[in-house]
Length: 181
View 1 (tube, rainbow, N blue to C red):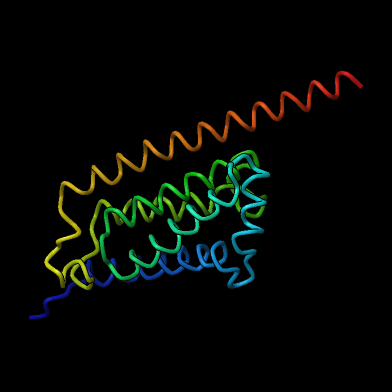
View 2 (cartoon, one colour):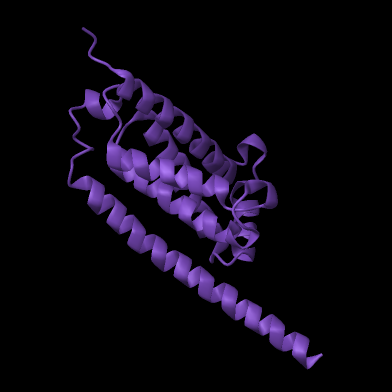
């Protein structure tokens, strides 16, 4: 009798795929790898879409994606890793939301899929083919799931709310300039 089952293998595949994509996106932001723009370029972009200060926002997002993705792939500290990645993807989805759902139109489809997969892993757990399991779930206790998701949701709501306020203020300022001309 095997100690692993279909569920464990499925969770491993989901963790490796989701975590790998997230880690690669984070490495683009932090180090400029895989065609990314590094902290400087990503910071400028973050600032342009309302996340300020840009470099600090790029660092936080890069760490949430690269760190959360790597930990998800390993199955280590799964509640915190999944929550961090889901929060970063919620922030990304807000940037893409005006473009609709589908990624081909610049929409939020990709960010939403990654965020939901990361949150689902945080809730479900990593399975037996994971470091969490090998370490006796010391970083994957039941109480950690609502705490990690709750803290991340609150922080994400604050960050996105501040970003949306900056975007609204900028848009209103641009409209006033247009009316004055």
